[in-house]
Structures are given as C-alpha cells and as structure tokens.
Image 1 (cartoon, rainbow, N blue to C red):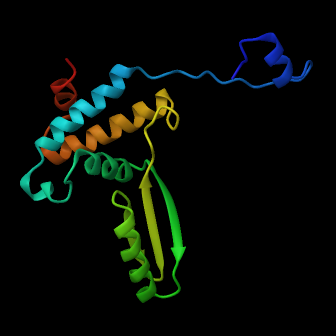
Image 2 (image 1 turned 90 degrees about the vertical axis):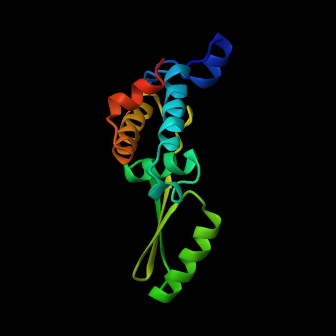
Length: 153
C-alpha cells in the first residue's frame, strides 16, 4: 500500500530504505459474477445421482475448489483409528463444507480457500475459476467453453 498523503508516507516509509512493491490487479465484478452465474446453471443441471451430494451450489463450488487443489489443510493426530473416527464425526457435524478424511489415527480436514477479493488476487481467482469450471463441466457432461457461454451474456 502506498499512502496517498505525504504525511502518512512519512509515517510508513523511511527515507533511504528500499521497498519491494507488487502490482495488485483488482478482478472485475463481471468475472466474479460470471462464476456464480454459470455455477448456478451447472448446479441446476447436475445429474440426479449427484443432487443429494451437492444440495446447494455453494456445496458444489466449495467441493470443486477442494478437488481442484484450492484448499487449506489441517491434520489432527487422534492417536487411534477409533478416536480419529469420532473426531471426524464431530468435525463433519460442524464443518458443513469441509472434506474430512480419516487415515488411520489421523484426521485430514480440507477447507476450500476463500475466493473473496481479499483472499485471492486476479490471477489466483482466474486459476481457481478455470479449474472448477473444468471439473464441474465434466460432472454434467458439458465442455468448459459451453458452460462458460451459458451465462456469459
């Protein structure tokens, strides 16, 4: 962040000090809204066998993010497989959108990364959007291009 006012700049920066700056590109509202439009259309066209697994488009989006590798992971060592099963059950009850996996005595919790403007820059958002579009298009038997065009207008 570069302060807009000289006095604030004097408070934040030191004369003679070198600072690395990165370019921050704001993603457009249009591309953000486009994702949710095609996602709704895709969710409404899910095959019957997947409808119960993804009761809302938010369930679909978050699971697709996880499956595409856009997740945060926490691993809990519960000590035994039986304890891990109990821990996993409790976590599943609290974490509606997380993927909870038991691996022996360990519980792996994967939570979809936020796609908010604060959490993802333009490049990361586009990569996640493309990845989940490809995944979801395959689930409903469409191509990513066809899915993208459905709500691009």
